[in-house]
Length: 195
Image 1: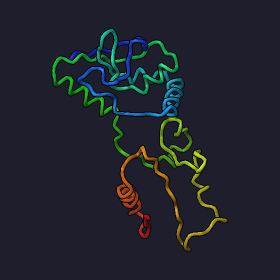
Image 2: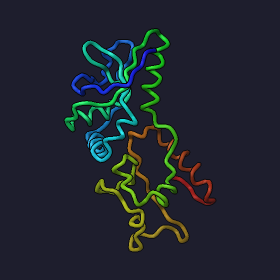
Image 3: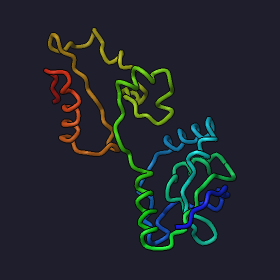
Image 4: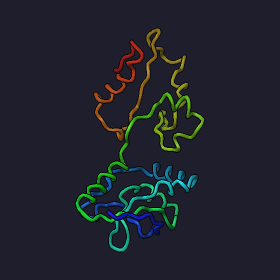
């Protein structure tokens, strides 16, 4: 497969809407809030785009972005004129399969956050602004975990602390899968239960 690193005009880049026929549309969805965070990130660290260029394939008089659609959207909203890209020109079915695989891999969420490390070693940084999911309070704002324990509220059984977690639906899974994941995490503390 031919590939080349280029600086391309944003006006010549199209989001992947399935227009290539052999490449299904981008399987990811995002909110305006996520786009705004990406815009903030790009404004703070424009050089990051050099290190993480968009991946594109030729289409008509321009290119279709198959990896980096949200960054492309944010760049368009910021009014950027050019973006670093790697252009791929598939020459066979295997090349097209490679592009499909990379599209999914680029959008995949592998691994899990080490919440202990984040809380104890990364807590001096604006993690929410950088896209790290956070606890959300009733007002939708970030919640300080210390505020979860109010001594004036109805106390749990002596020697126990009750914690309620709200898990947004975009994290998928059914309630039993989520409970099992929490139970596995709590195995390090004997006596903890999940209801």
